[in-house]
Image 1: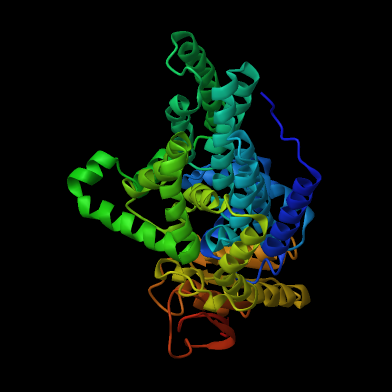
Image 2: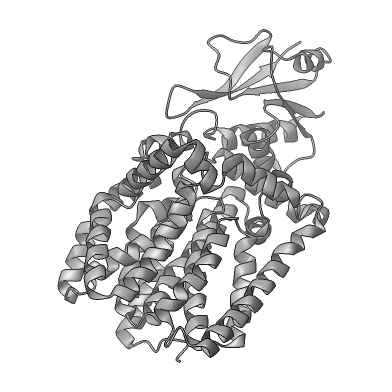
Length: 494
């Protein structure tokens, strides 16, 4: 079997155009959306791990696998803007995922479909948003695409070297996020639809042995987390968010229906209605024309989607983004029979709704057409508008002050103080940041006591919304979010 496609000159030009358009759409004004609470946490973890090797497994303290944190250390080392640096990790992950769809088309003997799916990847707001977001979703999505590719290679070649590469990729995927396990379990389910003479005993045995080798290597890589005493937190954290599908079906069947309904409404909104409808049409056409590919695409789309729908107690759009590329394979099939001129026209029409989303993301992210479940990206306590500006102000004050500048934040974990620490790290040693939670009084006792020592004291409110100035305080700056909430910086006097 040929492992790598031989591109024609036209295909090489298409590939270059895809990469250029991808980087242009993903990198332009990358930090236009202010930092989100999860981005502050994960980016700060990367920053801490970069500075202190003993904290390389810091994400495990909150039950998160460490690969994204480790990779983000590289751009953090090289770039000045920490949010741009960590979002760049997701941008590059998305590029790997998009190119993976081209390779998927090649492996399934329809490289034209692969190019079309990659073009649709460019046009999908769902993938655009998370390719520009400093969380693990983009890396997990890319992992799923390449696990499909390596699974296809293993099934069709039955080679040991492919099994070892699959095991390596599987281990790295499991170090990204727990849902990668679903992808790994889909590989044996894909075997009957791709193998020639799939039920021949010798072939089944060889496949199962090679798959076993791959899974053992995956498990070995995953278990390097045992170097940290916090590995058990992964299971504890997962138990907070998911239950078994049997428990869900028994105790809360309505939740499954609600999750499924929400998932379809989010796909409708974020794939855009035209691409969603095209995917439905492609599903139907594929069922009629290519039954084996129908089963493969369906397994890799519906498998991850339904695994999440039937287990998630806390359900958000970002938890299903890893299924989106496989929906695009349906849509790409519907377009793959069009002549080139008509295909370009169809892609131009499909891009109209996406262009509006992209334009608002670049220029006015508060007005992006987000679904209600995602409103906290721009509003409420989780949205980080003003965190960077407040950090810059405090760093400037600390540099010009003869003594330490102390700032107290409402919160000990999350946007505050992690966002503040992220933007001020390494810029001054005279800025002292202390998180306080819970806060029963405004101003908290610790803030009042330190203010009496005639120090330069600041206090940041984000969760709590006030209508009047706290006692002995001056509002230095405030930033309104997309709703009526504010983040406020106060200087406290004795």
